[in-house]
Amino acid sequence: MSQDILNDTVQPVQSSDLDEETLFVVSQTFKALSDPTRIRILNFLCSEEHSVNEIAEKLNLSQSSVSHQLRFLKNLRLVKFRREGTTLYYSNDDDHIMNLLQQAIDHATHT
Image (cartoon, rainbow, N blue to C red):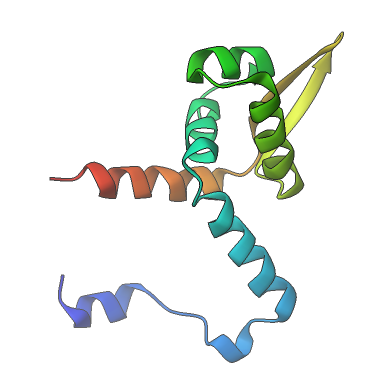
C-alpha cells in the first residue's frame, strides 16, 4: 500500500489532542491485548458467553488464573458478566476491541 493511499484513509489524531485519561485508557487497552492469556480469553468470548469454568477447561488454565484475567478485562470494560445462581457468565463488552483483536489475528495469520 502506498503512503499516499495510507494518508488518504487513516486520519491520525494529533498527540496534542489526546488528554491524559484517553492516553491512559488506550495504553491499558493495548496492555490488555499484549498478554497471550488475555488474547486467548477474548478470542474465546468473541462469539458467545462462557462461564469461568468453561473458559478454564477449554483453554487449559486454572480457574484462579482465568478469574484474575477476567477481573482485569472487566475493569477495562472489555468483558461483562451476568450471574445465574452462583455461576458467572462472561461475554465481550466492546465490539471495537473484538474487531481490533480480529484484525490483529488476521494480520498475524496472513501469508
